[in-house]
Length: 582
Image (cartoon, rainbow, N blue to C red; front, side, top):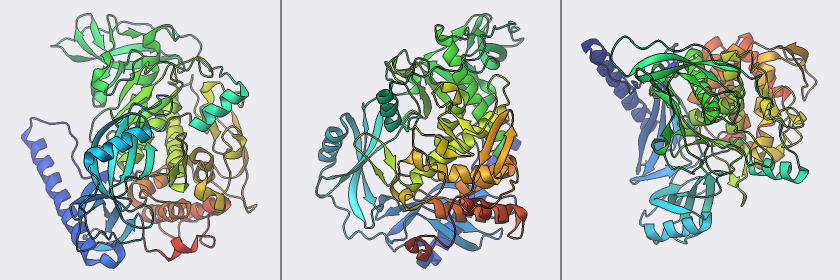
């Protein structure tokens, strides 16, 4: 395993032993956090921690080898700082080992008294984003090279196809909008949507052969509610097993009690603002859907199968207990909005949102397994490194290397969901979106990303990566991952032909997908922060490999070779990054 969290899951227990373990875990976590805070203050030259700064803990992790890692958000003079997060690393004896930090600058804000009121900031944010503003929170924005006192406002009610909420940051002195970032990053980007429409392309989804459900769950012997084994006829994944909740002799709900009550509900083609507002799917015989979109439950089957398969992937592969590692199962809303040709992870409702298609380019719900794995992985990324784009254009397209890593790692783990699930009707591969029915037969692919001509995805790093659209830029690290896992050159895996090139003409021999996943996951959760770029990702994965296998290991050397093969090397690290302490 890549390591475990100290934080105890949200599920409660009536046993004294479980309570004692929970208390011991909380005490250990508190001890680690205290040591990390002390280390951050004692090593202020490294951490950038000033006299007016405090640290708010976001996550605490302990590696099997004994290292401790505490992820902090910075608070300056009582105000949360965005773009100055950090991870403090300790050894098994809780001695300071180093820090990974966003931004190499100290936060300096002589006053935290705003000239603009919260209501004025909210009004400016709402006008800018074209929606309804929530509460304006005073923050210090440290992302742009200097510290700026600002308000951060969540604005709801934007374009449902590109995301229904935005985080708008407004200068608290001038009222200028500093940034407007979609909180829901759709599987289909605004740029791709425009490209497909300009080309007049219509997706022809690769649906599964029409399945038939069979079997009726046996009534639970005890009191209700109780777990029950059902079956579902999905649109994309064939006939699938579903563990549901039996609420009466002939009544079942699409909720999985074995996976933190992971549940799928019906949004009824409305843009609902919360999961709880959705209507529960119920059934009399625990046989769900008919394999076509004509039955509203069919999309729900795909979604439920996807969210529970993703839950299983993270738990089996990394020991991660849910998206936020708190034991809570994923949630999903299908039939979201009117003519929405997209799927999203929504931080607002902490759930998946699936549209039924726009009726123009996409005419089926976007509920394929790798779409779910990709989007729920954005939830995992948000709970850990929380990569942020360097800029967002007026159409909602995101740019920059941290944003590209966000898309890439969601692809990496989305592929992992397919391989771990091993569904014969949804064969695992290194392709993303192959079930959507695009003319190029996939959306993205990892062996040679540039075969994705729709998004203009690149194979290698160059200086254009600094400001490349994030789906296009994602190819750099996705390609590095593929090379680490499978190696370069031509090969056939699971019936799919791949031929992965290298920038320097080198030959890379892969170490296997299992090891590659562990290295990338450990790097994400321990050594990456909101501003991590490709060269810092290289360092992070090297450190992860060193932790797990040692610096003299084949695994460590292959990580280095894989990044070199996509033109990310120590030698071409940007000077400003090379000089910064992390």
